[in-house]
Length: 503
Length: 130
Image (cartoon, rainbow over all chains, first blue to last red; front, side, top):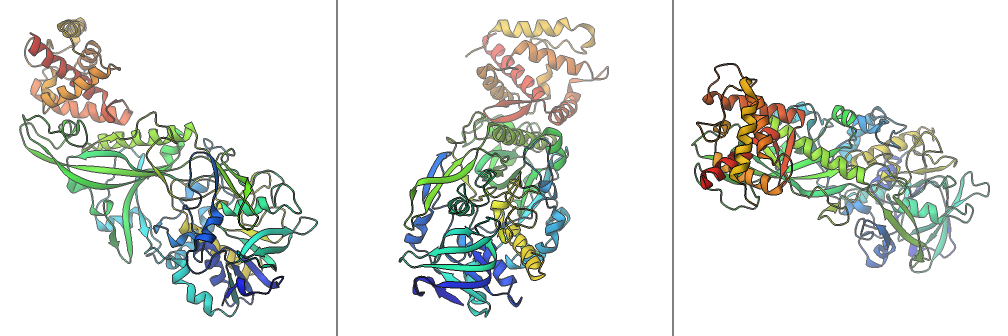
């Protein structure tokens, strides 16, 4: 059922078995998965069922380093940021979980095998097709590019409608006898017991001035990749440095996925070799798919690179007329490059295809890229977020090397030449690009408390009854893989452990 | 920027200095040079001009000529000018596989293609000034 917290009596004390902070992809999935488990669940959502400016303004904050709009990068009402996500889905690749010698702070305490049992159900929840992201599955629609050299891999995304969790699963929450969803309820502090070894209660407030508490046997923080860190850091009545922050790790390692659209164009003399699924949303069985290219694990290991995922869109025809000077087009030297390709014969007119290429790219975990608290407070008296996001020169070099590697693979293929559009000396703050709004790393997962905030089961190190969900637990950026599908898979995994009494 | 007759002659001179290993005497003034392998020499010359204007390695006619002559020296005896295009395709593929690339205005092409483009540009300039 839904309860408007503004209607509660001031000073109320609500008790439950499991308290979940945040009704986004993780929180809603976890709550639904706990239905019928015999556990009384309270799902605490800051917003209402629809967008409200006053609530959204609680996200406003300050930034250092790379400019970032904190209040438009996420949504603060029932459904969370699934209310504006694009629906791009891929699982995290097996190699992303592994420690990579060339990526400091890499290596998750879980593997892909730990998530595989939950991905098929996560696919259903995100309204996707079968959990089969193999190239063989894609090839049913036509041959992938198959660029030579073993450095570039074909793959594809599946597309969610996109599922708006707050709409799609609203009735499930409303009708569940064992779920109480508190709307307009803002957790202002996760209050630790005096020994700081467990959570004693949640302090909650409404924008109308009501204050109340929630107590539970198990607490799950799932408020988003930035807000999770903010709430822990602001929970300092018992632990002055912030909850779970005795090792100064909360808020650090913030990562995003820089998105370039486009980063390159290429000219192809054999457009028929570009399968339609690369350029458009294409039915693949019961899924909607779109092809992409990425770097192979072997290449990344050999060259010491991060991953980049490329998507592309065929554009206009480019005509080559022998003996005639090239016409001025949007891309300099384009026709001239076409004449270098294998399919162009002397003295023969030829039509090539211009293709624009976008990408999302990985940044390495960086402890200096971090969320802290600002001096200013919000309408509830909570310190606002300060984000000092950093992307390093190494991240830039890796991206540029990946683009050059793709150019080489296309050249070796014989049917394309690639032009990088962004300058080689671009600065992250000056370049025309945007962000994926994937907030990762601020409560990172690690086997040891000295290396991370949560363990392999999402339990906060050193706290007996607090778990964290969402991409704040990501140890690495996982290429440029969109996190929602895996967030849902992790929620299902935690639900199974809670149901089994293992957590 | 423009290029001089002197640049062209220096390039040709270096080529001759390679001696008997070179199958053809690839003078820019005599018979077909290696740019005969290009589908469209005028188009390649436009690329070459951009490379020369950028004045970055390998925007050097003599060095370009030397590298091309070295490649040609690997061809079997009796190879004819008309057979050069398949060989060029092999060189280009090998360059890409080995990452021997040159950038011009953001485009990635191989060093061999860049060398030929520069030679085409110098040929064109030579024709215009000669």
